[in-house]
Length: 73
Image (cartoon, rainbow, N blue to C red; front, side, top):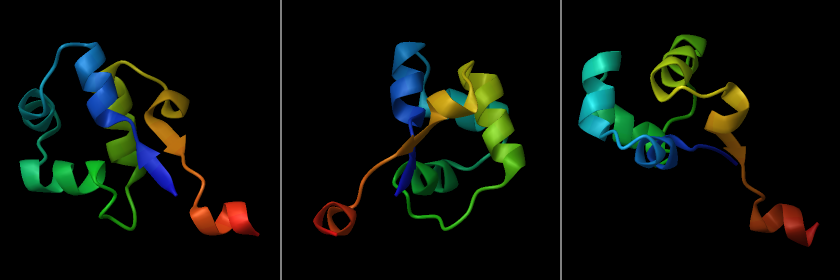
């Protein structure tokens, strides 16, 4: 499962989710859905904006978690 390290990157830079929402023009509800992995897709524009405002690369932003099922196979 892919997750985004948004909260960790914000904490590292002492920035808030509110700050990110204001800069990216995204609602807090949608940002929280992305953070919790409740979305099925994300546009390249959002990935680019996350990287721009969080001062990171896509590889720092995106994390691949192993599923329990993958470990059992």
